[in-house]
Length: 96
Image: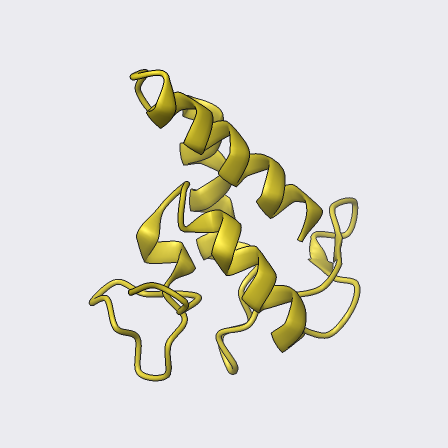
């Protein structure tokens, strides 16, 4: 969740200053969509072990909800976690 707030802030700053979305944001979102979202629940894993490249804790709704708020500034598709996905390419779901 902490990383999501940083990524969302970087993306929001770029938009507010009229700059293109930073490559760092795009890479982070791509990685999050591919690895850090539990395919069964659609929730973000609470903790990730980068060394072993596995989830270090279960996915949580509370962390996902807060992360989705920040990630909406980075990429609306990764932030959209509404049941059934409001956006056709949704992952997380709190958009619109």
